[in-house]
Length: 179
Image (cartoon, rainbow, N blue to C red; front, side, top):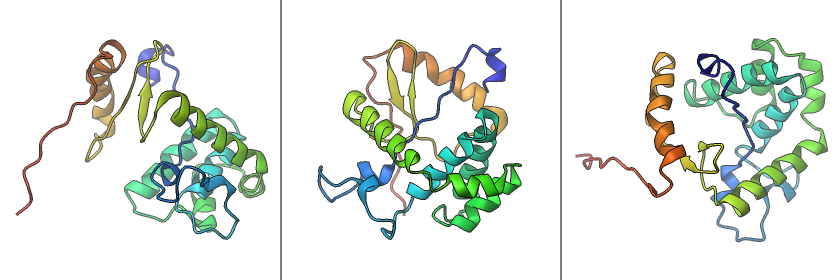
């Protein structure tokens, strides 16, 4: 999608652990402060994204898309080091470096900082949340997601509303109850 805009679009993926925002533990509980043995559903995948990012932006993009497909298409568990290493290998990352960087404590600090900024400063509550340069933002939920060849058209339809209509707070399609 970025190529279709001739480099005029800057996509910056940031960490936002849904496990934190959806926690019933109270406002003082922090996912990133839990012991390594805590059974997190997504923190390891966020750390894996940071490990991939250390191999460059293109490596991160490849890993990120492959990880999203592994989770949402193939329904694989994203809290498994072996599966994450398989994804890293499948997109050409240096797996030894990836495995080492997976445990870098700087990743946890970055995840915490990005979550805190998004949640506390901007009120983000879900992913994906798309921000425009003018500060307008919107959470976008699509089920099922668009096919790759349709993604740019969907973005072109949505982005003018996200960036230019700050008074539009929610668009939700009613769904008939299942029988």
